[in-house]
Amino acid sequence: MRGRPRRKPDLSKNLVIAVDGPAASGKGTIAARLARAYGLPHLDTGLLYRAVGLAVLDAGQDLDDAEAAATAALSLDISGLSDNPRLTERDAGEAASRVASHPGVRAALLKLQQDFAAQLGGAVLDGRDIGTVIAPDAVAKLYVTASPEVRAERRWKQLTARGQDIAFEDMLEDIRRRDARDSGRDSAPMVQAKDAVLLDTTDLGIEAAFDAARRIVEAARARHGL
Image (cartoon, rainbow, N blue to C red):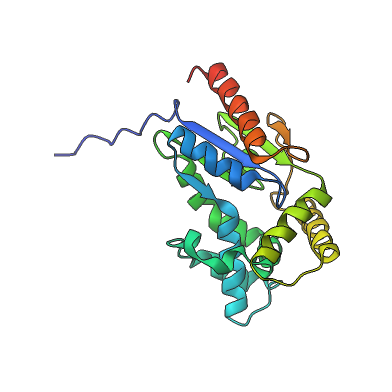
């Protein structure tokens, strides 16, 4: 006797929050706090690309080798990513931006991210293409940004506090180079979704930025009856 077909979960009431933006804009901190506030799982998708980049480097391969990067993405083990201190280092960020330009890498990680977003109840994801590619139907979409100088200062202070030796001018150049690469790639470029709300954190502290983000999400929930 044939069993009854499994009923797909009703995702119409999922609170999916997409937080996009460039490096050091504050999107990761905001996304993590939103996840705690709403009791939702959180995925920093940038860690996936950082892990792929480090895997390519650890294998002694070229970050510009699309096939090697795609192979690393297909075999990625996401357990314990948030506990790996190497993923927060400057080299990991540069490596992530380079491997993310390969369509094969993005394709390999696409389903993983979409499955995370499709969890019953909802989820918070932050990255570069969440609102445009990963979760285009997200209830709330934020595009978090800040001036390159402010973002470079934030990242410079973060890295120097960990003992890394880097000049501010080099950090600013890194930020500008990553912005150009992330927004200029052919596959899923970093761009503000048409229905995303812009949140500029240039002159905002974390509390003010989070408060603004929470109000954006609440307005989106009200529109969707959640």
